[in-house]
Image 1 (cartoon, helix red, strand yellow):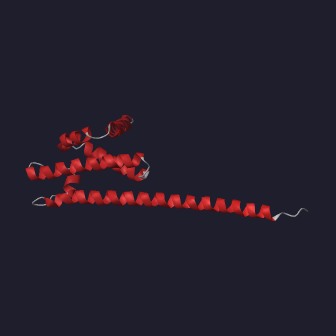
Image 2: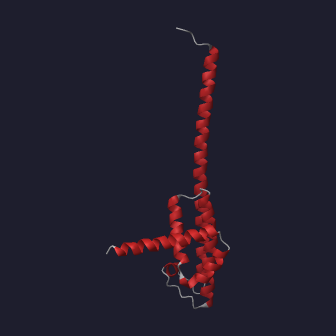
Image 3: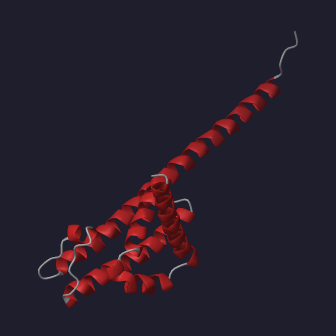
Length: 164
């Protein structure tokens, strides 16, 4: 049996140290990515909460539940202004959400919930003028995504009725 020289042992220890260091760096990068995702979600939640808070500025305050249920009375100019501002601001948030999704900073499940919310707002006839204005400043890709996913859902639902 041949005796292994000290030089070979030193090289082996050095190689193992490099591999261990790379594994450690990989774990650190993964942890940093998770922290970035959590931070982005927290920032989005905080911003949306602030925007929703504008409903309480009306006199009397507007119910967010009424807005979500499409029961909001927009005949009052003050209520209409608050609701229009809410819709416009949300489209700016959605534009940012789309960018973050494209950059990989948003989980797929969260993105699908956001996309569902966008489609809901896009289809709100009371706010069509505000939506069109906001989307005119938005990326063409986002508008195409919303319109195409909305159309494909309608096609899917109409196809399901054909089987009856």
